[in-house]
Image (cartoon, rainbow, N blue to C red; front, side, top):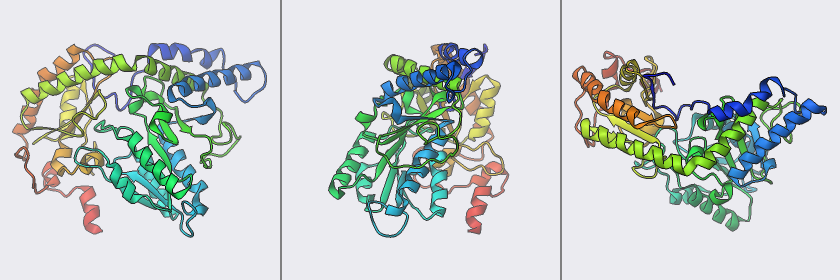
Length: 431
């Protein structure tokens, strides 16, 4: 990374690891064959895909044949949700008569899941949302109450991409397993998106108890444009992409061999260095959090204080506007993210942060710092030196003066945009 640039947005994407790039290079130029062909070049490409699948399946604790390569985590999520739903449509869920069945998802899922659920609702499926508490966690008891004979699928993210809160996946899996034993059915299946979690948490599918699991290479210092989906043998699903029938007819299309090779290498490296890297970034994250709390008043932590990924720090800095904070910090070479939409027309706040029960102003003044391999103590100190100065500037021009811990706030999003009503509120008013 260029000198004077401090990257704190590893949840968005990660830089390509040099070892991953070295593994990929031959398959761009020398070994460029189509893996569907039977001659030497094709066989070598196919062998490279098999080797990558073996590396990933070792981390997952599954058979290589149970892992499907896709173009992204979003595609994997779509494949898991739509593929399972459509394959089990006629059963109505556990053999119930009528209807297209029910899908349960948490209300902090990635948009790749929430959006495909919206589309499936139009196809007649029932979508029910498992709500998180103020700490960002779902309650397994709530899932117990929601399961029914029409339930086809449950999907809960391993760790959400805004706060990094780690969900009790193994406990949720036990709830589902108990329900399946009671009803003597294979349904509902259980899916989790582990895209954010894979760099720092154990992703062994046997320990987690999941039937489907999504991964993304570019969250693991691998290449963009490649993801994957673990599909337990025996899970009933149909493809969402049709064509030549590659990958056991579940995902047609010529495989992206260089990206797949890089994906396999990235997963192997993550598994090898997971514990030491998690401890290192946690120490830096805690130092950043402690320093911010000491230097800046009226700061609120978003998500669970301890059950979160070691590299995540999502805070709301009261009385400021998150997008302005992002732009000021960028001028100083500090790259962070915010729960304030970078869209002056909508200014729609993060639905994940709003799901925690906070008012609009909290989400709108949020900042997400996500650390990674390139984060150093010097980078943390640089943020702690400049962030307080930026906050003072923004508060001096802010129309807000909230009290920390204030329970009832009359939300006025229009205060941020010159008295206009934001686009997302106009839609609600029309409805």
